[in-house]
Image 1 (cartoon, rainbow, N blue to C red):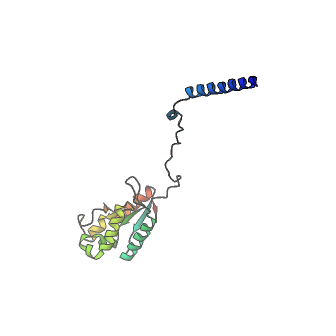
Image 2 (cartoon, rainbow, N blue to C red):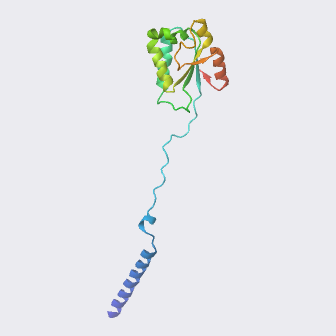
Image 3 (cartoon, helix red, strand yellow):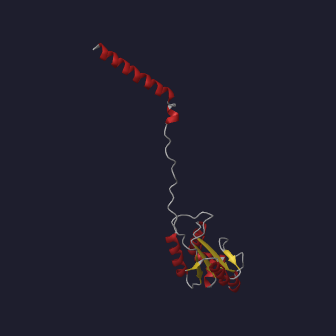
Length: 168
């Protein structure tokens, strides 16, 4: 029995020394702390970028332009950043050019304000034809500044189509 007790003490001492040695060689808890995996940003998988759209607008009523703006608003899910292309490039070169003349603002205020809002959100890039403006007696300083003036509307449509835009 003394022999068994002695063996038990020696084995316990061996475990105690082994444990002591392991604790001395184990790095401090801060060093052994397992770092959580780096979190990847939640970004949707890359999808095929929809084509840039150009709307060659030659409408005769504000209701037709209103329908177009409603459709753009339905497509807009968030404000666009400066480095993102607008959802639609609109080229105004028909009778609708008169809707945007400063002297007609009171009559078409809702339409002009809606266009300005969509332009400010980056949803649309609106070009207005200077040739049609001259035909209607509208000076270049008589349209809101959010409209990008181009010399010839149909030429701007052609330029956009050549640059990969898709007509809608």
